[in-house]
Image 1: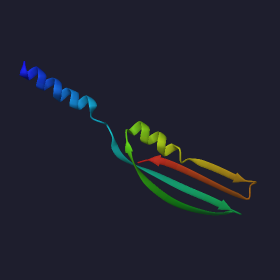
Image 2: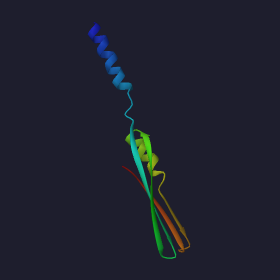
Image 3: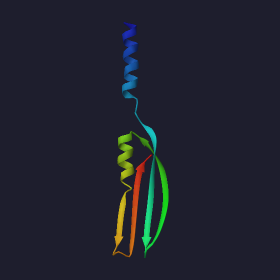
Image 4: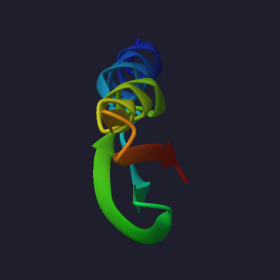
Length: 79
């Protein structure tokens, strides 16, 4: 009986253990103003499940076009 109880406790610990890991969200920003393009990179760590980290990282994606004079694109990807 003790083995069953111990086994249940161990399995419960695994069931409640989080699948959280630390992922790096890398965002590349490209800005073009009057034909001149500049690029920069930034990254941040997200500690969560891979699915939630991907969703959170994708929130950084953006595109802005100012009447063809200036464009800025941010593309974020989980690493």
